[in-house]
Image (cartoon, rainbow, N blue to C red):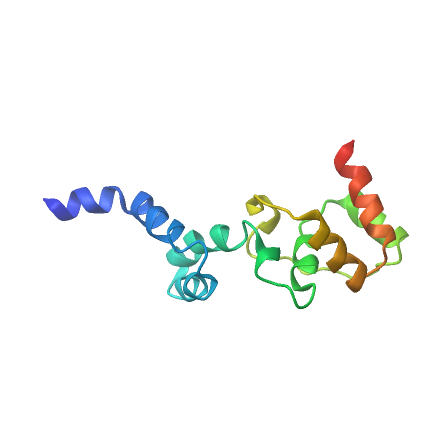
Amino acid sequence: MASKILMGNMTELMENILSNLEDEIYSLYSCALVNRYWCKMSIPILWRDPFLFNRRRPLYISTYFSSLGEYEKIILKECGINEEFSKTIFDYARFLKALDLSRLCFQVENGSNSCLLIQIHLTTTD
């Protein structure tokens, strides 16, 4: 009887457990590697504020670029970024909840043309 009740709320229980690991990136990363279900539950938490954990190089920028629409990809090409970004399993941009613009500016400027940041800002304010 108790197991049926527990299984009915498994998603909610997992969300509560994983949200308590929010600041422990290595634990969340390990959880994402357990199986597909755990991965599906962990990735949104890991990608809420990915720039918080990555201070060394702009690894996440290209992942977000892969989520851009056709209009934004045209802007990238106009800025001299002609890369083809591969499709990802998740729509990581959907999980983003916090964005430190100064950190984003730093990573974009160090990883690509500064024209890009201006164009992204213009498209998000429209």
